[in-house]
Amino acid sequence: LAQSKNVMAVRTLREVGLDETRQYLTRFGFDINEVPRSETIALGAGSLTPMKVAQGYSVFANGGYYVEPFYVERVEDAFGEVLFKANPKSVCHQDCPQMSPQPEMDRFASEFGEQDVAVDGQAPENALEND
Image 1 (cartoon, rainbow, N blue to C red):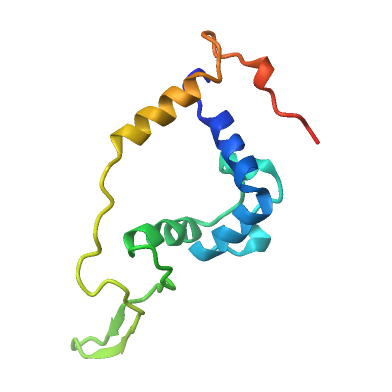
Image 2 (spheres, rainbow, N blue to C red):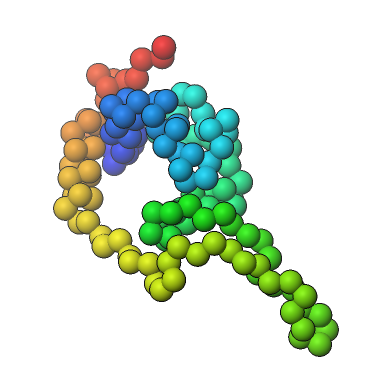
């Protein structure tokens, strides 16, 4: 708990706003009806299939664009003839640029989060109100 970023995540959610956050997640292909209507979303709450999680993360790999996932790339018969070939939308015709690590931001996030907890991992003064 002493290294937890939960308090910072909830504070960020409160600053951005719950409705705005839920709406933003639709840009990653998530159905707004599947996104929790509570601050637990900041802690990763929700019930998503592995495919939904992969599709959400794929937005980063696709240069910020959502691409509809597909399950079958192609189907061949016993002789190697292609019976079906998927024609997925492509947004990066070459390798998409990779995000560079941001050690300064990581260090800031870690130090900022550490200010929210006491040495023993308890922080009753930062407890979230149950509205």
